[in-house]
Image (cartoon, rainbow over all chains, first blue to last red; front, side, top):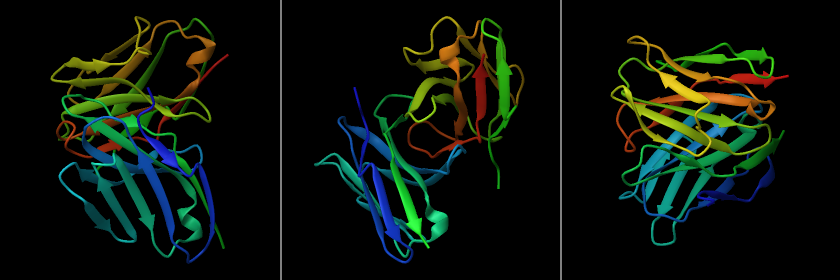
Length: 111
Length: 114
């Protein structure tokens, strides 16, 4: 079954604007991670948020987690052209040794 | 900064041939993973490995696949008899702990089966 589902599938914004991406999941999780992938390249780890945390910040990134709604959001503030990439959430269920990736949001930041 | 390294970056192989994809995880990490991403599709979990044995595997990881940690640093994925549908980007990842720590990914090996 689908675990992480990102929303929107694609997002196009102007440089300097904020970008918000959402991730919904179905099961009880231990943690949720966000990754960035530039076209055809590797997965870059952005941030991990644990199930007992509600919000985390890292530079221009802000991640929230609502376990009651089974959803997370990634906010990129003051976006730059270099932020153009696909963004994925990955969840880890309790007692498992794997991360399940969502379908991703393709972000395009226009200069 | 420590990173996961994968070799080769690109491999082309004939259908039916065996391939071995190599990974060097981050040195103090204990959990290792292989994922794959078919072009334009989701990143899919293949297998996780801890304490010299498979912890978990997906339905994709059938008898054609195997993993090994042949020495203290390398972690390999072997596909015994490649099929066209094995063409994908294969990612290795490692994490210090289990599911409570960050998983760091390598740059991937693009496998093309012809």
